[in-house]
Length: 77
Image 1 (cartoon, rainbow, N blue to C red):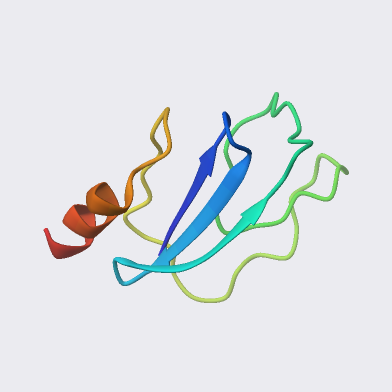
Image 2 (cartoon, rainbow, N blue to C red):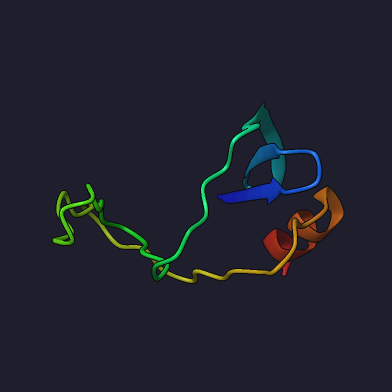
């Protein structure tokens, strides 16, 4: 699963198994000032809760929105 956000177009895109799955827009993104958190919710209580059941692995972040080709290349490699 790969999610991208293009700050120029405010477009979020979801890919599953390297294939396009859907797109949405968010015209009012927030300014994230804290650390990236994967697999757990943070409900502004400064005490993360609601952990995901199962495992989260091979997480990567990029400072730009990946293209469909880049997502497919990651999936097939």
